[in-house]
Length: 217
Image (cartoon, rainbow, N blue to C red; front, side, top):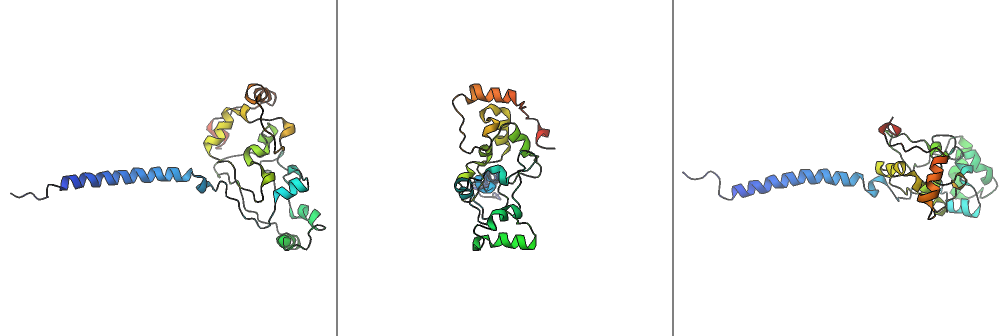
């Protein structure tokens, strides 16, 4: 009796099964790589904003401190953004006819806040309190990079769980004196991990919170 399938059919079946298995596993791995990629997180992607605000000019040329605009950084879960009234405090007199500032003037006339595009978008299932971090010695540039050198602000760090845990398990690597919180140029010295870091962790009562409910509440 003649065979129903030709001799090469077994080989074809094995190849097909291998291709299907490889496709399934490969698709899962590809998705895992994709969600962890800087492109997916929009890391290093300088966002356009309703008003072309150049941090370099305001911090370096005008000498405006971080806390003048982000005035709730030490008191609230969010650092806050300046109100239209605060911006107009200067721009009623300076560049008050510039077309670049027309959205700001329109906001002041209508009494409607400017809708800024969020740069650091922490997932909704993650709790983050800005004030506890800065009050415990973790500076602006640790997470936000050299904002004072950015024409348009972009996300510097990955914001992955691994990135957060890296600091939570070894805070002595990143902690700094409270007097240096807003110092964008602060650089840890050679004594950071051996001397300064452990001393500040002890003095400021920093806890190494690595349990799930520290961030997922």
